[in-house]
Image 1 (cartoon, helix red, strand yellow):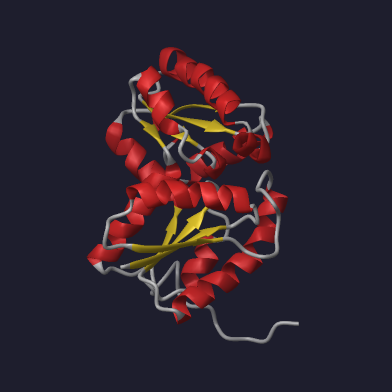
Image 2 (tube, one colour):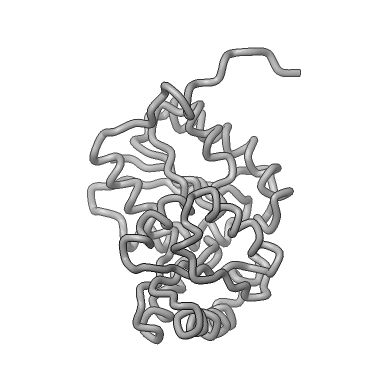
Length: 235
């Protein structure tokens, strides 16, 4: 089994952090490549960043199809460009946020999400509304740190994250906590020991989800939502 993980920003630090976490959890028989685009935003902190990250990511999705991977994981907890990626891909494209939410609702009644800065809360709420899961959302709390800060300052991120997650559990009824950014890959274990509720690292969850889908040998349906785009010229 061969899986390609695409960190959709250009941060080599976050890419290597994801690679380290995935190497610890992957099956022995799974081959994995973890890459990022050469061009695009250094981190994803806005919808504007997401828009610029999509075109180079789609080029990597095309290349993965040519190289015949068994599955592709888009490594960002915003699922930017996932619909377009699935339209152009004949192999499964796993969306990190989507996969993590699917797992979270199997582990508890309500989930809480830790995100970067306050403006990203509204975007996360929009995603949850679109997924039809608002009644399962306990709350979304912002750490007040940028994606780059979350990557560079792990101990501060964990401490602030623990304090916010504890409030979500005690005040909002969260039974599961989601670390809502790939820059926090690997941070969940320390929080889980303190909180004593499941704390999901989307990098781990979505990668294992990718292994499952590849094992099953299923593909995206092409008769509707992910129908291949009509060939045309672009200028």
